[in-house]
Structure formats: structure tokens, C-alpha cells
Length: 64
Image (tube, rainbow, N blue to C red):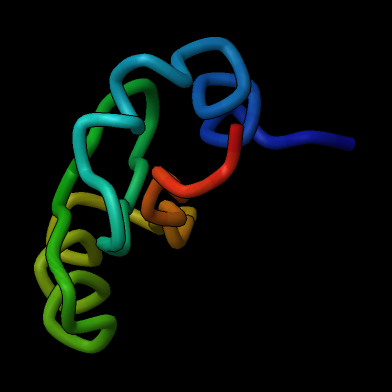
């Protein structure tokens, strides 16, 4: 069964897209932390609850 965090992530791709090539931590229905260092993002987000961590892929500008 999908979590609340997963459902929010799927429903808000525009928000997550603001963080290309970063880890994004979702807690509840919000971005709790983001950055390039997974351990730092996890530690910061864990202060707010149990996070779902997602790696945002950088857009490939060479693809047509």
C-alpha cells in the first residue's frame, strides 16, 4: 500500500522538479529537506518524521 508521502510525491512532480540532481525527503505532505548529500538530507528530514527519500534526476537537455 502506498504511503501518504509516496502519494504526495506522485501528485506533485512540479514541486519535486525544483530540485534537479538532488535528494528530496518527503515527510507527510511536504518537502522536509533536500540537497546533494543523502546522509545530510536524511538526518535533517528525520527530525520531522519518517521520510521518504527520492533522488531527482537531472533533465537530459540533449534528448529531443
